[in-house]
Image 1 (spheres, rainbow, N blue to C red):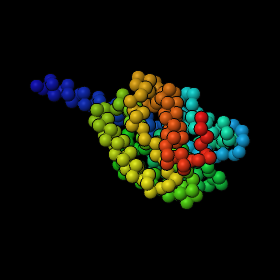
Image 2: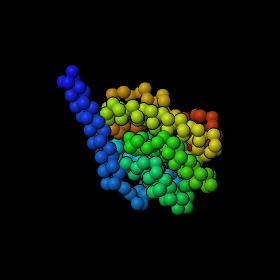
Image 3: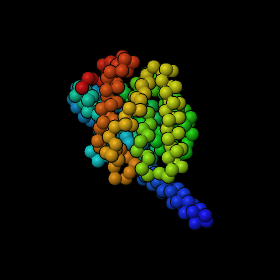
Image 4: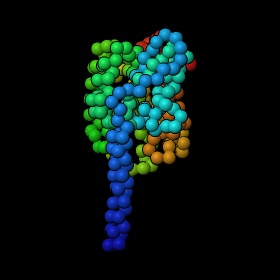
Length: 253
């Protein structure tokens, strides 16, 4: 019996240590990747169009080798077929939703022209045990600010599936609960902000199993990033509410 208890205890300690290591890496990634000023890129020709990207490493290109703006790359490329797109990439590796509000939102407010915002945040909150309601509260702060300027905002729910290969069992259980809870909190904001379009990701979770990770076991692969972006574009282009809201902004591919 003592041997069984010792084995169980050792397993729990080792399992929990994996999560501690990943949290340390996430914190280190954030402070090494912090950007005080936006990275600006220009694509396409035509009428000027300013596209702002907010969020974490999923959106800043550091998590993928080929897609500069993560899943937002699909939207940027589509827009570049019609517009001269200036991309203001504010996303920072390791950023929590509070970091997005504190560091990235003031930059957005200082920009003279913003046509659309794409945002993904919350993943770094849940792995650090931040309450789900805090994520929704930070979304609310962004939406209040952008609504004053009538800036359309596309946001993706937190994608759950890629965490399950690297964290401890106990951490995974928290992540599963926290992600679903945070997404429900964020959905409650949709009806209150006419410029806010939330992309639901439940159907996306069942696709591309075995191909979703990079070598770090944490971030989506190029294949998944692209599929995610295409899924978002399809939702924006065909959802009745979204289609009306973004008429004349997102051209059909």
